[in-house]
Structures are given as C-alpha cells and as structure tokens.
Length: 222
Image (cartoon, rainbow, N blue to C red; front, top):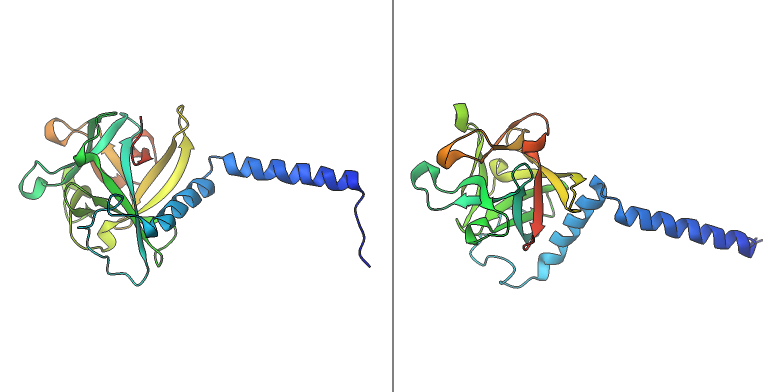
C-alpha cells in the first residue's frame, strides 16, 4: 500500500532539495568547473568554422574531437598567454605569459580540444596563430626543460594536459592548473626569466602555487 507524506512535510522536503540543488549549481568546486568545461566541449560538436580553426588537423583518436576557443591568462601576472610566432628556429611558437590583459590578438587565441576517448579533464591546446598543438618539450635540458611550444601538427602524450580547477579569484573567474601528461608536472610561468623568455611556460613543478595558476576565458573577457 502506498503511503503519503503530510503536505507540510512534503513541502519542507521540496524546499530543502531546491536549496541543495541551488548550492551545487553555484559552488566553484572542481567537479562543477570540470563538468562545465566538459559540457562546453561536448556542445561544440556542431560549431561553425568561425568557432574553430578549419586548418586544425584531425586527431588520431578513436573518439570524437571537440574544441572550444579560449584565452589563457597567467593568474600571477594577469597577462595573456601568447604563442610567439614571430620567433624563429627552435624558439618558434614559444608559449609565454606576456600580453597585457584586454589586448588580446591572434597570437593569444587558443582552442582547448578533447576527445571522447580520453580521460576526463584531459585536453590538447591548439594555437590558432601557429597552426600547431602545444607540446611539452621534455627532451630539453636545463632552464628550457619541458618548455611549452606550439610546434606539433599531431597529437601524442607530449601534447596532452590535465586541467584541474583550483578556486575562484576576486573577479569570480575560475582558476585552473595545467598538468602535462608527458611528465606529470604542473605548468609554471617563469616570471624570473628575462628578455624574450620572460614568462615562458614550462611543465616543471610538482606542486601548485601562484605561478601554476591560470584563468581560461572562453572566447574573450576583461
């Protein structure tokens, strides 16, 4: 036999459940932020060429590939991350945090791409300016070890990153860490480097601090 709750009790449960759902929707936790990024990537399956680069090669993956355009900001300096396509030789496409916020151009435009057969939270970073995926150069040594460079036309382990949410900053923006799959180290902005290498991004830290914090701004922003 079915039993029915008194109307007052039922109403109380509705209020409690509604409040819990509202709290879950606004909590800036890792699960919520990661889920939001996954949903954006999945919804990009039907995007137009204005939303994604038509020249980007198809990934050698069994799953479907989805990409969303982002600007990347180094939290430590509040500067956009840039692909240095004006550099030459083995410095071409060097990834640096060096462009004033609000002044993004083509060199600051990236796409975060994921495949449905990758581990959740794993992405490739495509530089629209360089026309290449961003690689972690673990074959380098010294101060250039594991530097990031937009140099690869194909995807492998050196081109994959784990994106994890950290916190929301004072502007309400979600802050993330980037961990290279190639060496399992977190990407840092080298603020103590000088000249054309200042702000170089390298996957070289085993923990997350201020230099390992990044903001992902979908399409644009402040």
